[in-house]
Amino acid sequence: MKRTVLVLVAIAMLAAMPALAQSVVSAADREAMRGFPDKWGFSLGAFLPTFETKVRLNGETSTGTDIDFEKDLGLNKDLSAFQFTAFYRFGDHARIDLAYSPWNREHTRTIDQEIKWGDVTYDAGAQLHSTAKVQLLNIIYRYSFINNGKVTFGVNGGISAISTKFELTGEGTISGGGSASGTIAKKSDLIVPIPVIGVHFDMLLTKKLLWRAEGNYFAANISGYNGHISVVGTSIEYFVTRNIGLGAGFASDMYNIKKSGDNGGDLRVKYGFSGVTAYARLQF
Image (tube, rainbow, N blue to C red; front, side, top):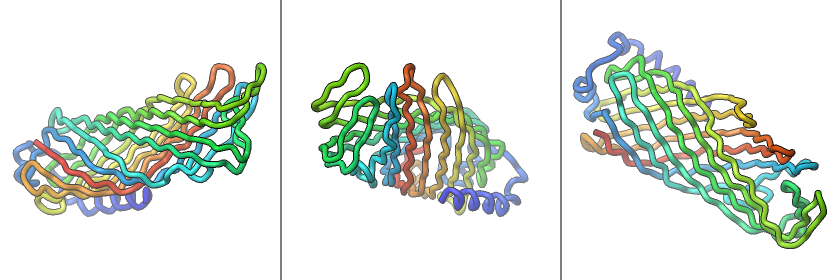
């Protein structure tokens, strides 16, 4: 699906070349062509993604188990959640975008294999309660070289911040520096901002009907964090009135992060989700 979005953007750019002779027009001219303003706005909607969550928490002296939270622990693979976005335009070329999405999943399952989670070992046959909480906050600055009412095209730069909490609770054994057994809860938190760069592209299909596409990517090694992120999305919006629009589309995000512990205890997270979005937008 990611490649499909990129191919569609390339084809659309070629088709839109005749419209690019005039790179920027005034806000009043853009509104006259589009049928809606673009100074500022916000949206609230639903996101129905399919998740892929693979995590490994190493102990101080041992290597943890690579855990698939959906397959191994039974977390719901499909989930719906709300998504909030907002933007503010500073001028004909520049605007800033914000997007926020939270998810919270938990499940209890009798595991059929030994799981090492940090310095805790949960034996096969143990009843294990797992929790995965994730919050995503993207703050993106968009600079449009072209913003002529028919086509918007430019580059992005900003921060994609991910906050995760993964916790396992069950009958287990702690090893290293002595040992203990019983019901043990062990969690690992991760909060990391990842810088991103990318491109955005909007095309007016007919008056009040807009197609959007965007992609962001980056890889970084910062202060004990090593990770990369890829985000693509596309949507169609129709403005039923001057200020109210309805949209639907597809989005796919992938985070691959390693956090180095001070004394071992490295955390590796491969977290991805993709699915359809539907939302209502207010724009002024």
